[in-house]
Image (tube, rainbow, N blue to C red; front, side, top):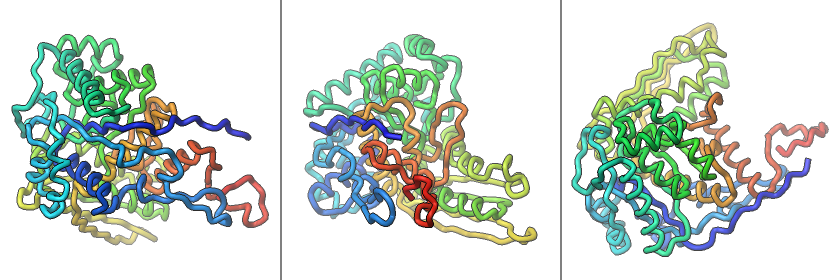
Length: 445
């Protein structure tokens, strides 16, 4: 079957990457891209910058860098901006976050100091452990949304940008399942005008971005782009959306280990996960309401990978425990422990123990960058609505209602790479491999 080539608009001009939140993750992202552009660091961890993809059959031995395969915006054409409840510029915020060493920060100080936050939309009912003075005031939530829309327009004009993407990098809000007001865009806009208490700041940012036709990615477990009303709006206005929650430390490891256990039919009796974290995110998650949002995204991964409906003998009685403890001395250097009680042949028990000492924002920054660049690519390719092919980066990938998300990291990568092949009219790879052994099934593996 011949496929009609996809038309992708060129990446002309400058791209604004706008982040609600200019804390540890966002400033680590900003500083990293500036450092890469200045030739003092490499973009390690970024699939868009360092990833290679195979084209055609294995016998062809054709490999190319992702950034040479698809028309991504070059990092030199990226402009950063954002909102925060604190008035510090990006250099001051990065210094306080203590993720990057001062020797590196000083080399990018001039550029970071010029990035000053816009006043944020903030509601302490949704983030109870933080408070700040650099916030917008308005009569209604619709007025706040209009103010954000104006911010986006002004930023594009003042910085000479042709287009923008938005990536949520702010704190985790209290877990708030959708209510009737988020059911349709009509009820949602009524709720904005009437100051409905169930509409969160992150939902206001999402609405503002979509109304300005700015692709939006939810890097947190907040319930924002996940609600039906905003997904409806994304389809109506032809805007790509993605979420939820950057997949960085402990959950990244789970999506590597858990599929391997399932694929080898190894049983799991229990999986105990705990973390210590001392940055602002850890402080926010010390509140039970905010932790609940994180617990939902972290717990759902194993539930979907270990389908007890399919494998009742192996996974029907898993005891899955998730803990996050705020421990200030650790700062951004998170430590995660996993104790996995497994059982094998004839039911004999075994254990796996993982101790992951990671740097939270160092892992998150390249994820945020890739999502921003791929979402811009998706918009220029005419994609709209949920971008499930970006599940590779997310703890709780949103899908079309009725579709179960795919959490296996290797399958997610195949989905991502095949989407890039689709964008460039390259043959998709299914890894069947029969053509190498005399069976012609049109396989490109």
